[in-house]
Length: 58
Image 1 (tube, rainbow, N blue to C red):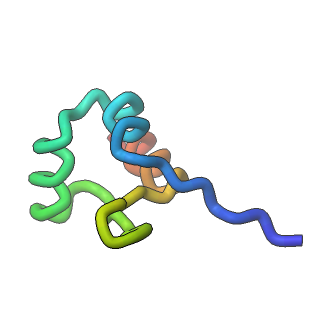
Image 2 (tube, one colour):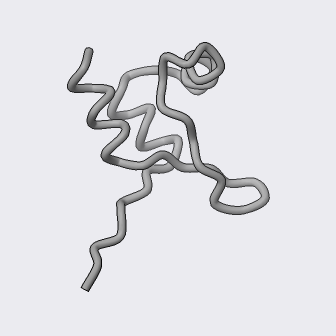
């Protein structure tokens, strides 16, 4: 049985990283933060492993 990757929403990512929403998106456009994945027409999320790897690298 496969274990699906946990997806974090924006509020969770902001709480874990201490960054604001605008900073997250600015860093994504610079390429210095993991890209979000589209969940629906108006919702995005981030892979938990990508966020944890980013935190570990800091």
